[in-house]
Image (cartoon, rainbow, N blue to C red; front, side):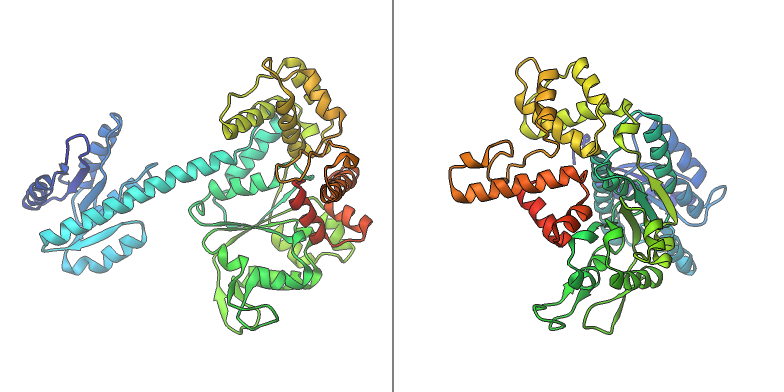
Length: 467
């Protein structure tokens, strides 16, 4: 092992013979070894070395020592931003204490008298687990960065502070706000900034699931429980075990399913369709809606008890028109994102163009702004984005940007389509775009106007890239 790659092992024991034995054993294996005679000395060494950017990869510590015990050292190290794995060394009579310490965050324990082979196996195991934990922390930081709240307005900063206060809580959160404001971004912030960040984040669009399949989708089913159930299936509640279940468009959940969802949330158990076996789930519930659930409760369209169970902590995301100071920051952020995806430099945008964007009412909120910037970037020349590019997109009414999956550009005349198939696709895409724009992106209202199921509307949006 080269000196550059040497891992640091901190050995803490009030017995000088044990310290020396472990130091020689570990140095022979190529590790750099620090030693300390008690927890206080060890913690002081860690604090001093950390200022120089050095930290132990693993700590081996005795349980019983003067001044500061191994358990007290463990607790102090666990408070650090990046705590190292801790291996406790215990006498035979201290094994129950060591087991309890592992529940408090210790990585492993070794029983005296120490066996050299066991020491090396345990240290290497802790090193591997420490590396995995560091990689997981790095990944969580990257994921949380991808879903950060972008803006400088007082309203958004206040929301960010609320998220920080609530993130570590297990309380259910109801996120409200208009379509396109970023309710899912808030939900992901709650997840990745909380203690469940290493667990799954499962999103369920309640409006997109056909009523007859809601129970199977949420709770799973067993083989043969209904026609088409060819195998056992995991439901969203079980898939979110150890993490967060995000129930989007919760206001559109059928009444028949609401009582079962309430029971699952309160009992923390689910029963798959066709089974009688209860399965425990450890999840946090975050819901979102653009509807007035209070009014839905009064209209008997939403269960009151479920509403109060979901709305333990309410978070409201203000519309973009109420925070124009965020428009410029978001615009530059979206242009940088688009550039990163395409591998090109981000186009510049003039102050005049930003002022034009800030003056817009943005009925589609942040989603609409992102799509407008995507369209403007397509029309931009080497001088970047100015008023003509913004007006070209806004003037054409392209509040929903075309997707590369669409068969033709939404700006084309269907009568000029090269084939009948593309004529049908383009006409249908433009029809749904127009009706959605007229309803300010409200899928439920659009479905009611057209006499269609919401799940069918969502399929059309997915097909033509209108989401």
